[in-house]
Image 1 (cartoon, rainbow, N blue to C red):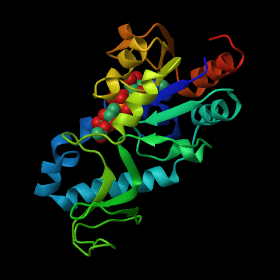
Image 2: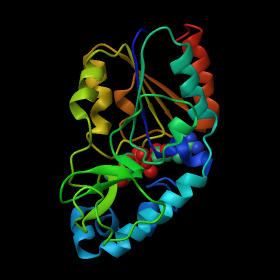
Image 3: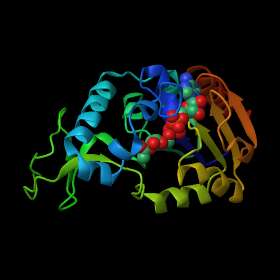
Image 4: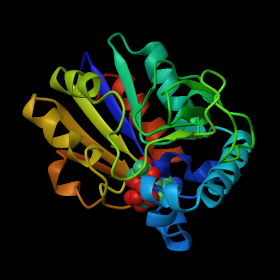
Length: 232
Ligand code: OAD
């Protein structure tokens, strides 16, 4: 199991106190996706969208990584081969847990993006629609998060990693959102062993060769111990 590629979703941060999207009481049961997570919603009401992400930025800044985040950092540090973490999460908890080189395919709450010139910078705690871009001064700043209808970041790089993967794990993701939900098939095509670690079966569970169900803070450290012991 030389090269390991790991995809994470909101479930890995649930026990850090950050809500998921589609579980009971999830974010998308309380906020319409089309209002707060699409370019059209932002064009209609930028103040509402900025406020939604301001709240999430504060929550993420207060949150602490849990045993699952730390276990993945331990895997990166102790596995003999390469361990690539690709996350759909925008909370920054992998880095707080000690992980490195994380690919943030849906962006980061901690970063800001200028819609006019494409400049990126560290987001302030609170963003407002008329904040000027520090590079071009246009009042066109937005959170550097990927919305529905936009292309996730670094896809070529991710598919290149999947094509070389010996082991692929999806952790805490419901399998509803593509392209991430299709990564398991790419990895399997490349000959990787595939494993799902989740609280309950995702909608793509049948694509995985192996499954482990339970809270991430328990099943991820157990799985990491098994990988490091050569039992996977
Ligand atoms: P979802 O909310 O769709 O799914 C979260 C998954 O985590 C579910 O399958 C839960 O069963 C599981 N889960 C919940 N608590 C858990 C725990 N303690 N341990 C392990 N698993 C647990 O979140 P994602 O799949 O990450 O995109 O959602 C994917 C994308 O949809 C997000 O990145 C976001 C969202 O819309 C954008 O905003 C573009």
